[in-house]
Image (cartoon, rainbow, N blue to C red; front, side, top):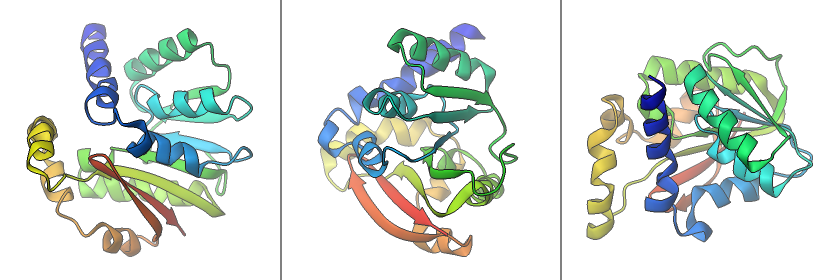
Length: 203
């Protein structure tokens, strides 16, 4: 099982090499640029903590909380954080549909490449919880895939399309702004990045 999660983590981290290698157009940069020094940040479904580590490295005076349901993935993330020598990331094992935080706890909440992997009912619960723990003037920074219209890029994206779980096929066709609005979240802005888009959502 440990080997499986190490292999899965390696695949997840390879996204930076394969799809986000142009850092200036990557969602990683878009997220980093959207976060201010004094923001309290929650990295929801942090996985291998790729976003948390990049932000914590660039802004070492800032505290980041990363949560994930998988203890195995958190162990991989802890190893990466230790190797990076970072002290400003706190990792917690927690269900994103039942967060153990008070209302209005965070200025920024990151949710990256998650919603397309789960059934709509679960996605709705995750967003409802994110909305609950978000401060009244806070922002949810939500990254999702956006297939390219260019043939070569579509070809490169094909493995993602084939490997993603079943909910991906319906989620990718959604009118996302309308979907978010139906859950009480308005789209403040959208930044189109390599193979992805970053939504800034507010209550």
